Image (cartoon, rainbow, N blue to C red; front, side, top):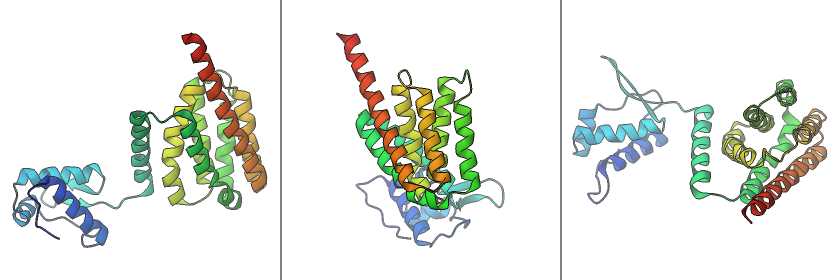
Length: 244
């Protein structure tokens, strides 16, 4: 590992980046133990608290884990797609909330991304994917289901649709689109939406996947996209009317 540090930059950040680069390059193998805090401090010519801060940065990114005891220390983590999806959802949610992305932009991004899964989903969907889709449709039709419950089921339905493409990289990339943007849209549109219409469109999507009919799947997705935009426009009109 390169141990020369730039005195004009934060030392702990540089150390964390150096260790991260070594993990990516394979110089520090998965489940391998990192040098001790004292050894790292000596190598980089910094204090142990500085090294400790660098390790905290790496732990926050799930790149390393720490263990106590005589055989403990800091070890390189084996990342998985589930952990990476959680990070993606968190970052997407923060970006949307902090930068106040407008409704139409979020809708455009979400449906464009989700639509890319349809060809693969129509080809690769298995019985378990169809069962998840049907289960969420049935849940959405339950009398007395709360708005929060309907929103959660809506998200779960679209996660199942994405997962039907059977591509973990696509599922990872779209985690933010579904689990960050979908709740945002639901939060804006829930007072105007027709649950029956959404259930009908979800049913059309599920049937299209069941029949492996890409044209029907695209048509249902286009209709859902248009309905979502219509709801956003209706909500905006209501708000403008209430302000005047």
